[in-house]
Image (cartoon, rainbow, N blue to C red; front, side):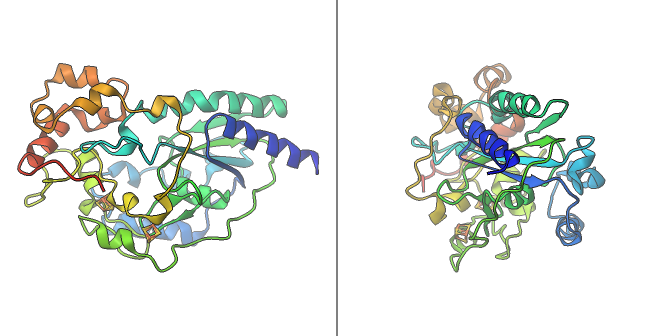
Length: 312
Ligand code: SF4
Ligand code: SF4
């Protein structure tokens, strides 16, 4: 085994020790024209809904070397957050524990430090859902999963309930082997089950119809006629819960992602009337902050028209 291969193996092992269920390297290089065109068409169709920030930084998104001067490698990692052993009827599995931005940055800091130490003079940059980088494209290139018809990365054996992160590195790492499985095989369960009809059956998502987008990212009034009766008030998860890749999966989840008891105890009525102070206190370390108190009250009020969802 070459010294580069053994160095890479050591780093991948470190990432797994930090809690990742999958890790792989890809060469830092510009995206292919076709990969850029798919994203640009999605924007041009307005399928990013109100996520205007997606329209910015196209040049950075097209080439990860613009995010770290001299980057030669991308380490892609997937950290599992589910399937939750104790799912909530109100909140998506990903939001039950502490905010993944904070947790993953702390988990990956020693990995990045080890990379810099392994190649003296090299530099790293940790990206967790904030830098303009096509996370799923890089994860596929690094061989850690494939993109399902539910528009999410699926890690064979670990499923789709994973957080993705990257560490850009100025040192060269041999790219990891590509996956054999690269597509869903005649399933389509997510497309059929999606309550918003947001999945186009070709792997594309229309955020304007997605309950996850509408309950988390959307500001202002919910669309007329949208029912959240029997649905979660933060996130959705239906397209993941019906996916066979998430069945019989037992992931080792970081303790920080265990459900927060106060969040689990919140009822639909209490969420509809939650005060700003209680929202800040209950969700101060949670990704639910993103919806803001107004958003959570709005969603809960819309859902109050129905009963609590059956967890599927
Ligand atoms: S999160 Fe829900 S609404 Fe959005 S694509 Fe998945 S199933 Fe459809
Ligand atoms: S539910 Fe089926 S079609 Fe959808 S992502 Fe999972 S395997 Fe693919």
